[in-house]
Image 1 (cartoon, rainbow, N blue to C red):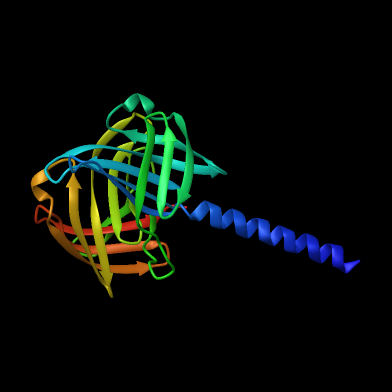
Image 2 (cartoon, rainbow, N blue to C red; image 1 turned 180 degrees about the horizontal axis):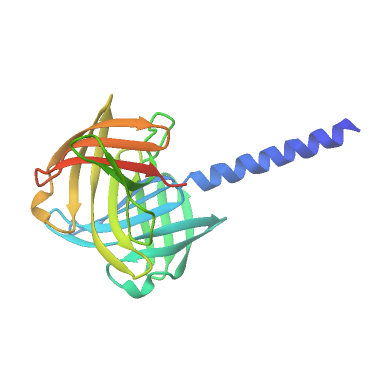
Length: 237
């Protein structure tokens, strides 16, 4: 009587493992660059996706939202879109395929093929989706931000980051920035590749002291304008 039960459990384990692998194989950063030098970066991790198009001299557009995958289909519930805010709240579906480190998305805008830039591993614990939840003043007192429709989120893969300030309820977009990051010990450095509010800041590197405690990430340092930064981010689940 034990053998059928063992076989069922084995099949269930294989199915769960296969589902997990197929869901996570898209995680990471992907890039498409056209002949004019215009780059489109897609970052996908922790059930959230951001896609941004820019050149060395200009921020062009960004969009993002929560995603789900069902076999060869990827659906996105749009939370922000700078080209068309009317898409916010809609669910868009893409045909998806991954082969030879290339990601093919075929959807409303046509077919696009991206090449892999990175993928999260167990040695990149900061990879995931984060939301700013507090700030710390000069005396060390923390002010907690109440959760609401307006939010500032940050998505990290193995080597890339992007933050976005949005309000999906009102379809407002307040700004975004992104690029590459490097964490060494308690030092975390961001290098800006694009910034929707001020392109003159592209190329700058900002270093922060990082303290990770459970699902909280506190970093202190200075912003690109020279202001003091002491923020608390919490992992979104």
